[in-house]
Length: 328
Ligand code: LMR
Image (cartoon, rainbow, N blue to C red; front, side, top):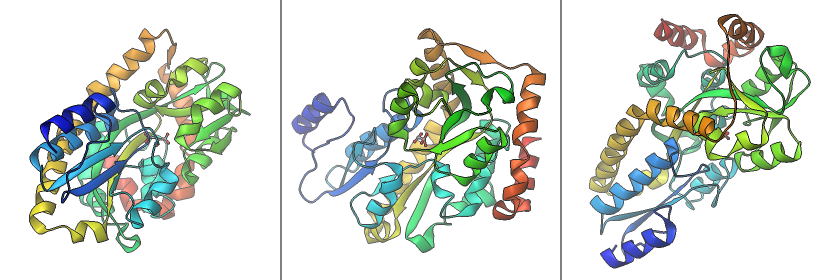
């Protein structure tokens, strides 16, 4: 990229995408569904783009397409296998239909905090999951953090019974469907880009997501408040197509992998701050955040934890035990 063209691209797109690629450069399209500004995935993807375009100039050129502008998560992996996009970072819930082990991440109250999630992902069991999509032609490059999920609805949620009979948007995941059924609620799987409209028009009453997603999508504007349940994790696996990855010259692949690993380490280490900033931004916007007492939280655990039994066979007892020992 010449300096003039890249300056123009940055001006036009505020760093979001559309870096002009020079002839001969390998074009790396990265499609994702969240906002860029202040969002864990948005920030990491932008940093990756910036570093690749600077350090691999002349060899490779990355274009990031955020906000579902290119693909939704249910289309992106197919597009990747067709060669239309080279990188994506769907949430771990979106992989459970391919590889049932991923269900461990959706089981409610499996991980105490993001340190536990990080330690599990770094363990042998977690690292093996990066290779678990290989027979489908996909390779996991690493995990990116977002955070723990909170519930919100168009009425106050304090006790689990408050969710009874309400319709909740969930990510397409059998575990999340079972989780909402355990609460006596009606789960509605739906693409991320449709959630704000569905909450606004009353197609659904509530949702579950992280502080960064609730702030980034402005869900708080169309909800009564947010209940701080920290009941589950929403993280990402960054994936690429094996065919494409192996088509790269070894020096290009190694340099890209090194930049990727450095960006991953840097941004994952910063997750607590990004999460806290988004929580604070929701408060600053005037929305109500309801904190639970120990007894109230215990009632949510009691209502939702039975879901583990339904999926223990898919996830593996040894993985549940490994995750639980990390929580100690
Ligand atoms: C969702 O669908 O709610 C999330 O997976 C979106 C995202 O990428 O954080």
